Length: 402
Picture 1 (cartoon, rainbow, N blue to C red):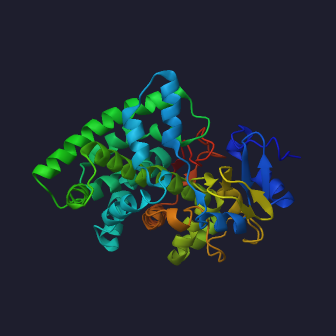
Picture 2: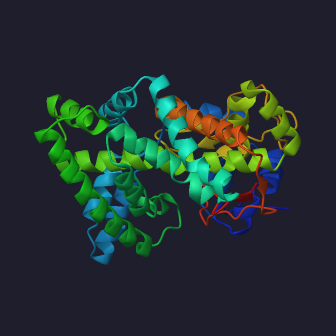
């Protein structure tokens, strides 16, 4: 039996299949304190959902943590600190509002129908080698490149530049994981230095010769605001938006394809009734949430599920456990497209609900439909390999054959 006090969500055994452990803990207590992580842990859907909407729970200031570590080691990761300063999900009011408004305007640049048409075009192009060659890695050759190509289209970047930028930035999100080392921080700084040099040049070019694209919109809206960001901060914001638009969405698409193809009976149902595509993507969000957990900090003393939480204490919101709570979802471990019930917690809620949730859902739905439009592929692996990240559920590969 797992001990509450010694529970560690970084434990390697939780990487491949954490759900039995979460179920055991959830059945014993909805909220508990772990000495190992010095935090309260929330596991049930009811408490996690309420916590997301609780204005007394603040996001953690990871930028300050990185600054403190860097000072102790004599480093000064300029680009990394700028990125964290512009990362919406690490900002609390009042700084949170202007950042969120600018990103929301970018995501509203194109009509949703136009966005869907572009995603479908990209998906068909990436899927073509499966039909032509008889095999494809649906993770590295399909799920990984699709979201960055879409984000590149939205910002106005060439396909080659978008893929280069995604490859360059791909190692940066590891610093969001508890347990990241100073080596990870330094590697992220090197990657960001290279990526930000490219983006600064693009921003300068858009200011001199605006285009009908998202990057030009960010520049013009920012420059016209009462308190505009300088180009370094605008570059960091662009970098954050690009990463946020591809990292977890690629994970979602891969997870959704794995679940669909690993359940032939449900795959047949969805193929026969395309109205189930959206629900198939939603079931992937529930069963294999791309983000498994997030942290919050109590701004004041409060009570959660009968437990007294002191101001300053941290709370771990276990999204992956809440999404499989039997009180919220009957037969929670089954993959059932068409399921109805409470909203999944994978995109958060309240002030920090994911702005791009509709984009991620759209991309996953179109990706599933594109694969089902062609010859039915079969999996070449019995189980996926998961990346060595404690809070991100993302496969390393997904080879299939026709």
